[in-house]
Image 1: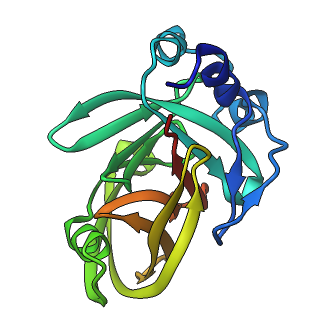
Image 2: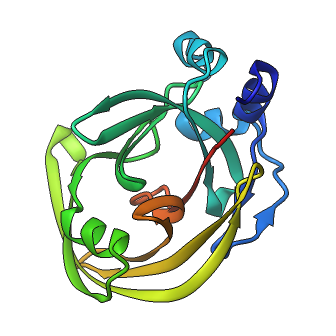
Length: 212
């Protein structure tokens, strides 16, 4: 069990990893992330959840070299909502990003059923995904992407308490407005580490599960 002190330290200064499976020394702070989100208020419920031993996810905004940790707020029908101390949120399904809150453009939801099935089963192929964003004048904008998924081979991921034996999967997506790629480190059908596109104005978001 991770102690309360370590959990709160993770909220202030976790590690960030780039597009490979190596660690990068952190130099971001919650204050820096709050400048991105525009919210300087700390969420006491998140701090209490961390103290109580709630599940943690390390995250980073890769292009901005900013890092923090988020606490599992809710689980419903296989969808996880992770919340940071400043109120920003990530929404994931088995580790695959489905939406964000409080990070530049609002990413409302996604249909990632096709890529999630292929990635977690370690299968190569072509899939589609659909993203819905909140645009100007509060209009919902849906964008579709065609994506190629391919296996990149076995990789070790150091989770601190253990070294996970994973398979690295890459997803390369093309749409009318955007092109991006995602990386997933998969262990036994579960995404335990990733580098995923967070939408326009956000760029790549890194994630890693916290075990202990």
